[in-house]
Length: 87
Image (cartoon, rainbow, N blue to C red; front, side):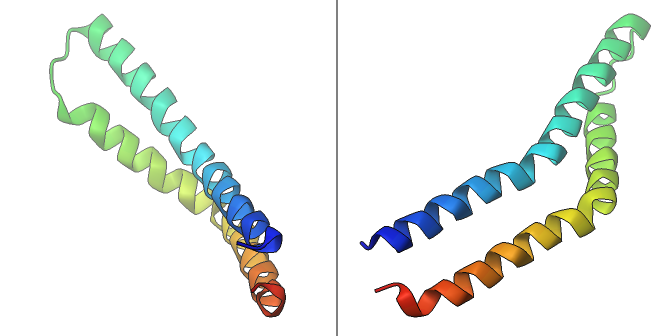
């Protein structure tokens, strides 16, 4: 493999990691808070944490969507411009 292809693949993997971090971080924090509240209040409903994580994940994606899609579009442009030099 060429060095430029390895660089593009590495950049793509790091971009995927960094784009998923905000949603994962919000989901983990929401899960911790809801679990703590359930333990304090004695609620045993198991669907509550899932619903809260899903709702906050959607809100996070809606709030950060333009930024995340801009980063992804920038990477796609970089890949398309580098394709002729990749062997």
